[in-house]
Length: 303
Image 1 (spheres, rainbow, N blue to C red):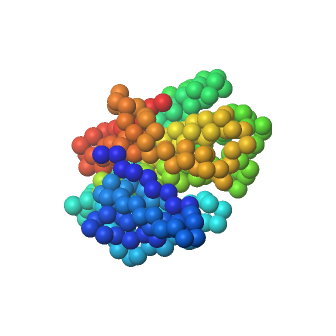
Image 2: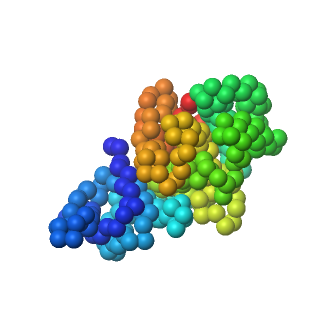
Image 3: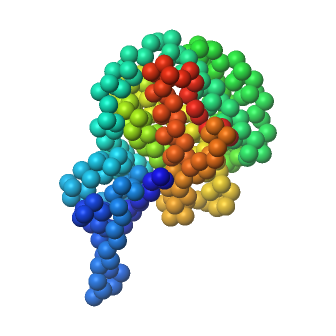
């Protein structure tokens, strides 16, 4: 089932009643009545809190965690700054944690090789979809990636990709705090990270224990590993937004609405068209099977 993404950018009160999220919105007029909307907790996948005038009870967070939702909190720049996930994502979680943690170094290197190959392929196809037509180098590097990527082709491909991709935005460079479209890219990646982290938890893995990323200050190393081949989908959404409105920014409601649609963006995985959030669940499930010795390859979507 496709889970819904709820975005709160205006004042609202949230509470829970009969396993329903009860959303109370203030009236538009002085004398008008408040508006109440309800959504089943079990249908919610991601909640984005982008206003300091949203209040909620503890039962809201408890209920959202119980049904495996991810909660994202934004800062005063409207960029995601925090992520909350369920700690009990699978019925046999302790056993799955043990299997995940016991993955050998050779296996992790092989899985990272697969991830880099899938990422470079999708970057190349993204450039072709944008008619930038400079994918040949990326495809050549893709064929040379070895176990563990000792030649660091992932980074070399990224430099080439970003130089080509960002050239279409009047010479803007890719920097986290740079001018647009950087903020829109950051926002889209934060949504993507929540999707992947939620999928990993639902498959009984811990998003901190990465196969490549090892930053001791990063609580989502595995999510950052597995989201790599998915990033070009966000890049395409941002390119589409800018193509329709060259002055678009993260402040624009229309741009933010399209970024919030990333979970339902259609991708192809295993030859089947699926919403991105469903594909992420498939990817996470295949990753655990690789850790458990039941599969040899992670299933990633292909552009």
